[in-house]
Image (cartoon, rainbow, N blue to C red):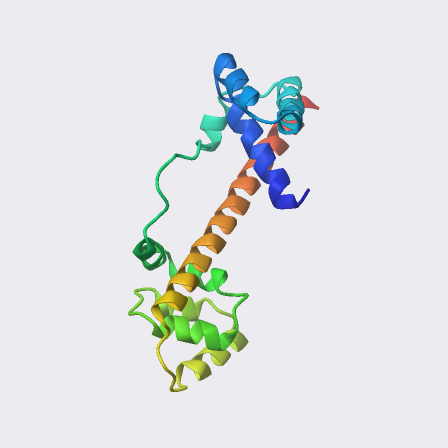
Length: 177
């Protein structure tokens, strides 16, 4: 099981832990046996450690909704609303030429902030590519890059959420000892 899957399973257990017992049993009954058993083990561990069911609300965890997937334009709008620092972090795995093409693809409000938050070497490489004449990104490519940035931002947020959970758990563990 990958780290991401383990984190998702633990998050699911925390969410289930916050439900009233009847709802929790109902959700577990809808899962296959193996999933239900793994989650039940995590729920038992949370109960053994004395975690309050209110912990999910204290951490700000919520159940995903059945809302429709975002519209194709939605990813680009979400990227537009992000901070330049977050966008730069999300684009770190991309080649400088790809980052430059992405930055040239729209009149991003955070463009300069994104460049300023890159390391010196990275900023020089991307700036050099910004000066290269090239065809604009195809709409599907721009959409794909925006979706990737959104996915990376979500992963960073999950990581941040996990760090918050770790801090709470450290405090609880100190209290238990």
